[in-house]
Image (cartoon, rainbow, N blue to C red; front, side, top):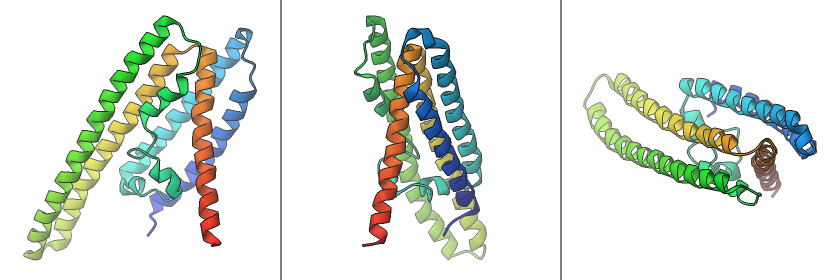
Length: 222
């Protein structure tokens, strides 16, 4: 069953991805010479704004229907399998900055950020695991209460409200780590390096989507 939030966000996400592809084209064709630093900084700003817009829209929609983001109808099975708590895994981003020519200070700062982000990932994963255990325990308790109650609908809604609040909190924790990763890396990298990094991470997202859709289309006709 699809929800109104799911349908609305599907449309938003499709448009967001189209805009991402347009921004990627600009990232790819801009000259890498330092004399184009203003262009580099402008593109980095546009891309960061594009990502911030996504999370603003995501959080607003998730507040209305958080469950839609744990069963996203706008993603292919391949994209869902490769996701980490409703999005990309922050530590993945560090693999995209490993091949550049960095100064010793940059390398030190990147390593420090990597350790910090990994620690925050583990914190989110522990919270997600804790919520899953708690959800299981609450489910059994609520089922026992509902069985012997005349107010079953109210109890079900109360249990679901607690579940939604918990999942929304965990999702926002994960999103905050994603945003910290982007912000932290862009503060360390030079404008040219930032352009390359954003081009790489956008390419992965776009290609993953195209491959996922291709697999779905093939499966339809088999």
